Image 1 (cartoon, rainbow over the protein chains, first blue to last red):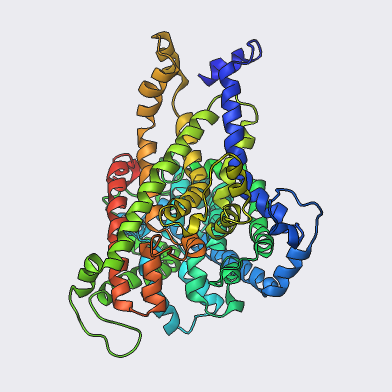
Image 2 (cartoon, rainbow over the protein chains, first blue to last red):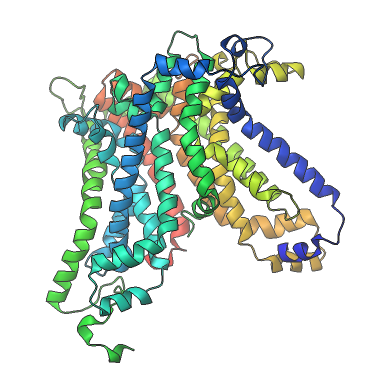
Length: 284
Length: 316
């Protein structure tokens, strides 16, 4: 349909149904983007306006007061660093460990490969929420509560990443690594110099996916950190609401803006490939 | 080509999964090498996924409470899960949340994918990105923003809808509206993911099928019913189960928006696991509840796996 339609496009007048579709998509996109707009615009609103009635979308004047207050109400710099260390650490370890394991499963020949693959896929089905209690006890026994080790180590490899990369490695052509082996390259050399450079798109997608999931996770830092200064941005912001019932919306939106900014920027940079790779997860 | 190279250096493709007969020594070396690649990931998965899973099973049959000695109590914790009114309430709330979230998110994603698949639509890639953006934003931040938008006093959305004659009142304190509200935030956050999966599925449908249908006189509605939807059924099944599994794990936005209230109306299983396991330190009981969650997830995953396992050629 699309090829035929495209070839006709220039010649035909715009169909009324296309106008309707466009209007519908614009309307839905506006609703979807509204919370993001409210975060950005409220972050720069004067405090009086944030809680004014009737509410307005745009600030009458732009101010940095909310951003200043969020950095004084919370150890915000520390939380940002924690978020980067936690999400970045998990991502770095998981990419290395997952790609090593995926390489063995996709390209090496060893006893028990099939059983191991099935076992790894089976752990994919276990929600982390279900193992959280013994996991916490284990991390506590290791003395890792309130430490980066406790946040990062349990997620230093994950079944999803292994499976995702394995599927990608399987699809890579094999003639170059065959040639490299003939030239006497070791297995690790083939992995590092041939397979990994060809897997950059998959590694970027998995990396961003892992980073985003960990940066955004709330339950994990809530469980493994008990001190406010060891939390992440995501868990730290929840401390501002509390049961008092009074929510400082301006400060919350300023904190939220800082929390989403690195992700949205990273996402916009590699969004096209990211969306396409994510769209085929699990299906291919 | 094989004949040109000495056998020792010949590239050996991975063996068929049944195994291949080879020299004992070569096999041992290969196993050792493969193990070196696998070891780091296996240690992490074994220690932090498999061991806690076994440990949770053991704890679920005890009255472990964080202090003192734990006693074996048999199935008592499991009986509590299905008889204690508060816990049963959390289980039923999770079911209700799943029933609210799954169809809404999947239909929204499918509908938008169908709209975006229209080749005449201007700025398609812009809209695709815009609709996907919520997926990279955390549940917590989504919950802050939506809570502000529907705030009964100063919420912009409340104000706008009020102008249209729709009065929502204090949604998050309203026993009937609180659950739809927290489910809606999850729809907002996750539908973009399902949407791009549908979009990829739609683009895999060969254009020739639509042409054939058109030649046979099928209108747009009939093409949707008899070409698009049947060919999308695999994608649909995958997304449905994915969405249900996500729904079973609902926690973040509920923790932020309602804390399980009002009157326990948005208390879900994971909220209950967190509270009983980490606040009340009823470790044994929370482990039993964890296992109920685990088994529910596992059943859904197995359905998914059986469904897609047939297509996984390189596993069979």
